[in-house]
Length: 236
Length: 303
Image (cartoon, rainbow over the protein chains, first blue to last red):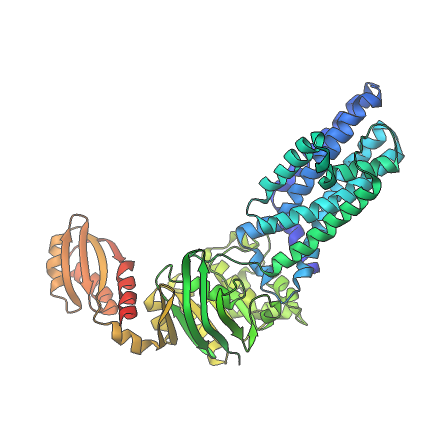
């Protein structure tokens, strides 16, 4: 399992797309720093920057880049065959990849969110955001890892989920929020450190249970899909 | 000693039948899987390697099904046609990683042995992305051999290799076959199979057209001429000279060059440069037409 994780991490950091992880965190921290240095009231910018940019864009987009990168790119270029032709339980392969995806996404989103949270309200808010982001990274990663196995266009489908389902429908159609990881993250952070800046629309039990379902369900489904992984022949 | 068995195996994609009711048994030794492009060779190999489920029938190695059974990779090695490798690793790192994933007791030593076997030790500490096609191919063979599998499947292993590498790979496959490994390699080039001189399974249009000793099948094919497209500095004069050659059955002069029908592949390809040199004609292009091969196969299918 550690070898799979090693190859996955080398592959992830060896590709240029790892640079895509930098702009959003820098933008988030930069905006928070600017608002803070001009002494703007956090209640005026907190929601837009922390929730609007941090939780609605930064966390899902980073999880998407990493989550589809750990498996999707290997499926794309065919290198996955070298890992699959080993007597490893498919569970171990998925868990190793998930571990790398969660680790990288959690660090890349929790750190900037922690800094933005501290600048907006204080250390407690920063910690709440970091913990919620880490929980969100687990659910998102499981979802995007699964997408890499069920579709040939995981990035596109992931973007549709983030932009259309969470961004558009989640705002106006209340029923869709139950299936929105963004809403779970907002609720978890808000309950840990209520500030008035976050606007959670689902209850805490729903958020916790649904985030767990996304994480475990996505992982189990991905393990099953990898077990029946087919390589298309030239005649297909 | 391992036996690969296909029993009444069919595979279809939607309405397209890629493999149609094939039964075969592979015993220890080298076997060639021969067929024109698109015949279904890769589909058969992928089913043997557990990367495709047969739509009907069973594919087993020593009695265990290959589909959804990762345990078979302890005794199976696969060199796929797609040459994708983790290019950011060095050859040694890659083969050691494969040995570790096979859970071998001493991965480093096993990797070293495999790299020596394919003569890649001198370049083993270079990143794979800097390798030529042939070197990549050998590295992938080392990775597939690192756990000394009883069964080795290779899809078009000679593609992109220069003649020396090709010869070395053939020797390697030979020696593995002699040591009791079950080796299957696919190819659409008859001459490659001829040189490995093992048993062949011929697939045409998804069906098993012939199976057995290569020489016997080849004799069946000799009344089908090989077709070559030739271009030279003086096509007409070359045509005159070629028609005197014993292995040439016919020459057609066309706008873009000559179409030569030869009865014997080997003697024609040896005679052509000699004749051209003698006549002082410069050869610009020599292309064996793949269609001729396909026509040989379809002839086999009709027979």
